[in-house]
Length: 305
Length: 305
Image 1 (cartoon, each protein chain N blue to C red):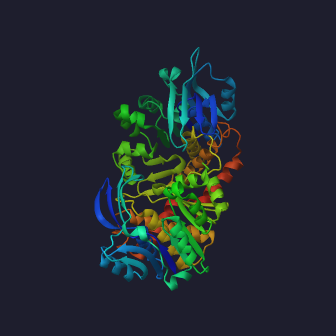
Image 2 (image 1 turned 45 degrees about the horizontal axis):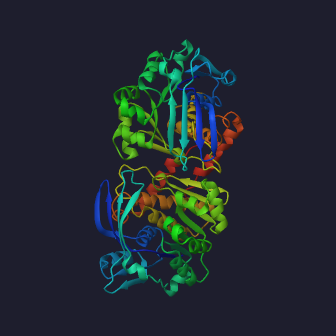
């Protein structure tokens, strides 16, 4: 199969209670692609950077089998920059700086081969840009997933609702699910969002895990309790990357397999937070991922008698 | 087997986004005993009330097989009263009124038969009162559990640490685990608390579920996502009651059975929040509890391939 990911590639500066990282590699598309690359070899990355973006990072992506034909490199342009500071509880953060730079002119153009990608992951972007990507697909997709955030609900709800109606899976956090649906209960929110179009809803709860809804079925995956969490940046995107990579690899969107995909995503996210930027994600092996998935099994398994 | 519960019996006035309940029955010991009574028939309730506490509520407890020999009824006394208001997210609340009333003179005296109870659940109380209860036990207990809160960590940490060192299982929330241990990671907090004495630690995360730690083993039970949550009051105590009732019934404190007990507690808590006060807890059947436990199994189960 093949996976198309569209979203940001960025520089991040991050402060957490455990340290600082200045102008390190970030961006939704970067995390998604790296995480997915452990499960599938056919990934199209569509994004935009300035020519200040390090070439060796692009080479590293290519070596993971990630096709960069859809990555626009703007001459004399500056790459999107985000700076944030995490609170002590690491589940909340303040954005200190957002410099859109080249992202302001992002006009995604899909390479021909990417238009028939079977799986598509749209990272958090302006809903109209996400719609532009959907317009370029050839209609043969097995599953299209979309990530978004409260910011777009505040300023572009109509465009957002329109693009949500065209996708199969939506990933948002619990507060966003409540805002989008107007329902306090996540169960009712899931029903309302299901009626908006997406067959699957994944509610990301950060350190509290993730919930998958598909009509009346629910599945809950906790976040792995870890001895050390250094940096939660990119955990949600890494989760989505693991999830979509697993689906692309197995090409099975039954609820049973979606559950395993959620666990694959949770395992990848649990690695992501153990170091700054992509440091940990770049250094793991597939065996470690399988072992981490088994740890999730142990964390959640009980026998009825 | 037999279960001893010591804690408050109270009147509560509650405001949630879904309504108000004025001077309804509450108190940790009440919730614990009602929840446990679905699993075990030998329960000793030790608490204190004024003679303003309704007799039919005491009769209802007796009819559940709950022994009230250790319940002191103070003539012309007023029962402990708590008033609270929940925020929109229902996971946070403000205390508006706390009238200790007769609780100010609570000097628990265990009935002779209760001193050899195999399972003991100490509800949240002044640590010195909890210690007084431990002093009266005959030493034959299989498992002693203790609930506490940040308030005692703020004003009586030494007494609290002393009583914690004498119990087998501690139930607190995630922020309290961090405060008690001085560790940000819950994994490290669990290790530190294990070193303080308790073999088992249960971290209650409200709508995000509960985590069980026993040395290197961890188990995560989510809270059941529900279409309607009316009132979270007593959910933590109901969880503890279900947990301890299940343990008393099965008399098996292996990690495997502790996991089932956590699910039993989670199932009871999921009923508790579906109505104000004890309304729902009083009206369920054991079959409904078994069905709810199966729902947890479905919520958490996935097959590895």
